[in-house]
Picture (cartoon, rainbow over the protein chains, first blue to last red):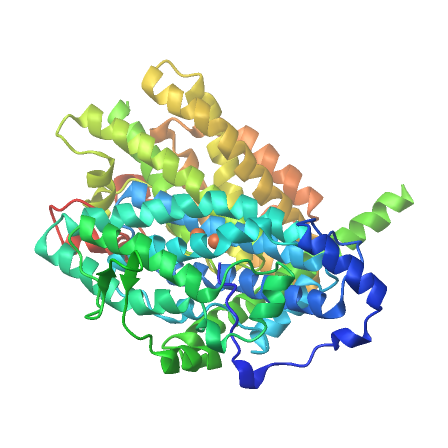
Length: 332
Length: 237
Ligand SMILES: [Fe+2]
Ligand SMILES: [Fe+2]
């Protein structure tokens, strides 16, 4: 999920210019990618490809990990034993996704520690969606339905992304995301059919999560730097606006089916396009959240930093013990 | 002699309360791998709680299901041991609690799996495998922390020290678990030896959980766990 390009054109970073690469190798590489071959860790690759991938995969991994927090906020308050078990299992899955993705990114020569360090110092980004608070139980339904739903739309094409370890991680992850989406929609369905108070919770959650969910697909195509390059290298396989449209078209009928209304006065079916037209997204809000100004951005980062700081002694102990054991075994 | 209901509710409450405690770690553990492992253990325990409480409800015959028992009883009716309701503290305290409890629970589930009550033994048989993993996981961490750095060793000692007063309750003769003590003592001593830690000195036991007389912590845990069921009674979730 969460592989959106989080910079706009003006912030585009200068990677090694492609012209500096060996033209023969570059041509061979591009031919392989164009033929839908997978690139593997030991294969030669342009420096810019490697950098783009590390940025994208680590950003994706960070999103999985930070994404554990908004939902983790409700595990201890889940309203039944079944809901508690499902939510705990889901949050655990997201941790597992983070783990596979860090491992995939490590094959490109950057350690998990370095990536986490980049996140905690604010150099690396994660999906904007996790900077919004979970206020009621219905938010757990909305996240599963909309956020995991959006993640699936983003990630299915990435199962065919050109970098082998990333594509394989995506295959495992996509299987679990569809269970996440279903459990979320099931929570929303139950609430929407429930008491007036439950229905209010459900509608309020949809009202708050709808627009941030549409922002998850990233900036509009005409302001999406690196997109063309990423498409050519098959790091990205469809444009932001294409995937966003597909999400809207799939989700609107789901909301109607359970009697909830999408908070968009401009939403209407367009016969000619065979798709929904929808209102303007507040990109100013999106870029503010990207800059770290989301409502609970500070809390999310503080939680991750303190988990890491408070756990330092544990990691040091595990290392010290492993070293002592190795010495003892060698002496035997 | 404890009834089947008494047995099932005790086993269910132990699993539920510890599962609830472990789920507090989700997203906050010292390493991603530990986060996943603690969630695994928590999930096993919540699963066990669901089975035991369902059985207790059926035995009771008053129409209470597992959720009614979990979310609509107050402190005086909870029958878990005091050990499982203790706060997570630092990772060493969490591990000390798990180490003492899971080693006991493994012995107990092994016994229950072989017991005559078929409903109970079926749950016990499934739980044995899960709990054996919990005990192994916690024991490995006791060794790592005890034999790690000076700091980890001090924290492990403090964790064991704070949990040790709740051990005797596990072997209260009124619950029929007294016979498990020698085997448990041997397991604990083995692991502590491997961790080059001393077995904590005996101390005055704190008990009461099995009679509904808990620590102050349980009320807060229930407040959080039961919030939605209490605030919106009688609806489906
Ligand atoms: Fe995920
Ligand atoms: Fe997910």
